[in-house]
Amino acid sequence: MIELDYRVEGIVDGADTPESRRKLVTADLYNLTYDMFWGDLVFRVEGADFGGPGPVFDVAYVLFCVAQDLQKQPKRTYSAAEGAGECQFHRKGDLLQVREENGPRGVVLYEDFCSATIAFLRTLVDDLCGRYPELRRNAEISKIRRRLLSSGVFSHCLASNLKGLEP
Image (cartoon, rainbow, N blue to C red; front, side, top):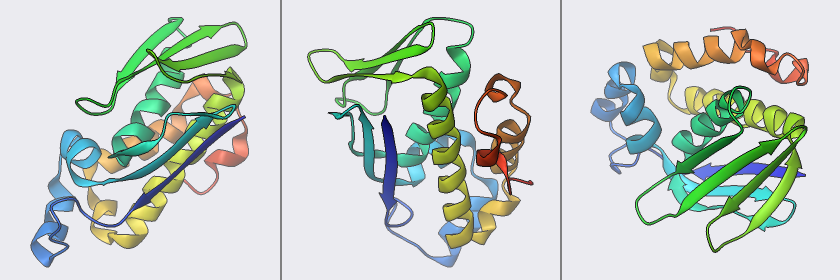
């Protein structure tokens, strides 16, 4: 079983002002995913806890990309923030092992990982666009939504996770 959840209080620079909201329209992928939306992450695999404070949007987007990458290569590494440690993903057939060096380890079905990452990214994008309507006009958000809709790599995952993602 995999559990993904988050809490984002607001835009990181602490200035949830009209000016910072206008920047959401033109923000690039780095600023959206790494700089702007930090919070508390829940990321558990079979009870192994990989969560904590960090760049919530970055983790959601990268986990989605990791699931795609694992179709072509059996291993992938991700480090959310300096000093946060590396999360290593190793796929063997239908199973995916997630582990941190000298830390927790968990195993989940690859299909469950795919479904969870789609749902997690979709929920986050929908939530942030609901809080900050300016994001709906951001080109990077539009690309992410199109990727979620057109990603053939997830054809075996639950189609219900993709409903309502029209860009």
